Image (cartoon, rainbow, N blue to C red; front, side):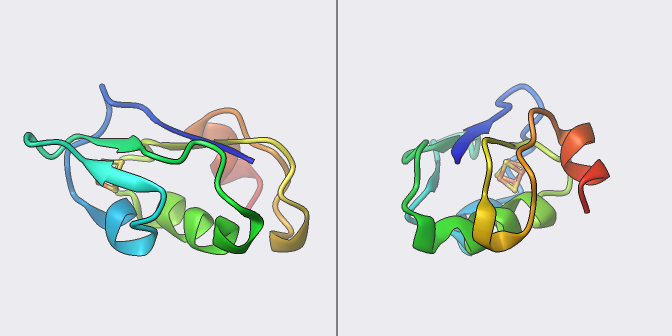
Length: 83
Ligand code: SF4
C-alpha cells in the first residue's frame, strides 16, 4: 500500500495524524503529509481509518491492501466506491 496526502485539499483537521501518527505528520501550517508513504502492513488498518476520518478525503491510498478487505484505490472518489 502507498499513502499520499493531497496537500491542496488538506484543511489541517489532523484526524490522519491522530489515527496513525507513524504515517502522517502535519507541518507548521497544519498541512499533512505522509512521513511513511509505504507503511508496514500492521499499520494499514489505522491508515484506512485515517482515510475514512479525513473530512475532505485528502488521504489517498493506492495498491492492494489484502487483510483490510479493501481493494486498491487511486483517488478519494474511488476510495469511497470501495466501501
Ligand atoms: S485528516 Fe485530512 S484534512 Fe486533516 S490533516 Fe489529515 S489529510 Fe489534512
